[in-house]
Image 1: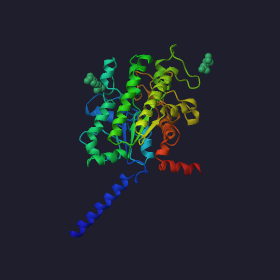
Image 2: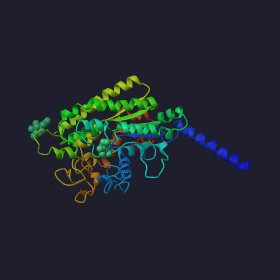
Image 3: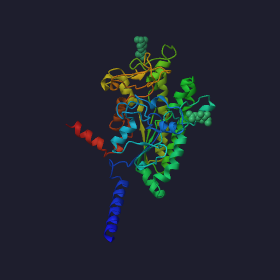
Image 4: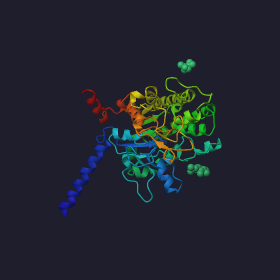
Length: 395
Ligand SMILES: *[C@@H]1O[C@H](CO)[C@@H](O)[C@H](O)[C@H]1NC(C)=O
Ligand SMILES: *[C@@H]1O[C@H](CO)[C@@H](O)[C@H](O)[C@H]1NC(C)=O
C-alpha cells in the first residue's frame, strides 16, 4: 500500500512538472499553450450549429452536406468545404483544433484549456439592439462580440480555476484570435438595403467595439492578440450577384471586383490599424498583431491561376446558379443547388465564404509570410511550421 501510494505521489509530481513546463511555454510549439477565439463564420467551428440545435431552431443550410465534405467528411458547422484559417493556425501551432464553447446537450466542457472558440457564424461586432434600432434584423444569431465576451468571462473559472495568477498565466500563454469580426455589421445592413454611405457611419462604432474587447482581454492577462481586418467584400459572389448589371458600381479591371465595396473594406481596415497603433502605444509589452486578410486574399483575386484557382476566384463552387453560381434564394446544400467537382480550383465556396484552399493561402500568407504586422514569425520564432518550411525550402 505504502509503495503504491508513493508511486502515485511520484506520478503526480511528474505530472505537475510537465504542467509547469507547459505553462512556461516548453510544450506545444514553444509559443502558445492555447488558442482563444472570437468572431463570426470565418472562425466558427460549430457554435451556431450547436446553439441552434439546443434551442430547437430551424437548422441553417450550412449544417448540411456538402459543407465539410473535403476534410471532416461531414458538416461541423464550419462555413466551408473543409478547414478554416483557425484550423490551420491550430495545426501550425501544434494545438488541437479549437473546440466550440457551446457543447452538445448533456456533454461537459473538457480539454478546453488547450483552446476554446466563442465565434458564432453571423455574429456582429455591435449588439443586435443597435442594428435592430437601425431597422436591420440579424437573420442568424444575436451572439454579438459583447455576448461572446460575456461567455468567455463566465467560463474563466472553469478555464483557469486555481486563482487570478493562474488566469493571467493561462491568458498570457494563449494566442487570442479577435475576429475577423465586424464584417457582418456591414453585410447584414448592405443586404437589407442600406447604402455604403449609411454603413460608413458604423465604422467608428465597430472599431470601438473591437478595441474595447481587445483592451478588456489585455486587462485580464492576454499578451498576444491577432486582430484581422475585413476581406475584400467587393470580390464576393454575393455582392457581384446583387449588383450584377447595375450601373451604380465600378469594377476593378484587374480582378473583376466591385471597387466601391473594396474601398469600403480598406477604409474599415485603415481605421482599425490606426486604433491598434493606439493600443500598442498604451501597451508596448503586448503583441498586438494586425492580420491583413484583405491583401492576403487580394493575391488570389489578382492572379487566381497562380494559386491553383483555375476556375477563377469569383465564381462560387457551390450554389444555385447565375453568373457567379450564387442565388440568394437557392443556398449551397439546397436540393436545387449544385457543387463543383474540384473545390480546390475555386476560391469561393458558397458565395460569401471561401474554400479550404483559399483559407489555406490566407493562412500561409499571414503566419509564414508577411501579411501580419508585426510579423507573426517574429513573435513566434520557434514555430515548428516555420522550421519545417525552412528545411523544405532549403532543399
Ligand atoms: C434576437 O433577439 C430578438 C429580440 O430579443 C429576437 O426577436 C430574435 O428572434 C433573436 N434572433 C435570433 C436569431 O435569435
Ligand atoms: C477598365 O476597362 C474599361 C473598358 O475596357 C476602361 O474604359 C477603363 O478605363 C478601365 N479602367 C481602369 C481603371 O483601368
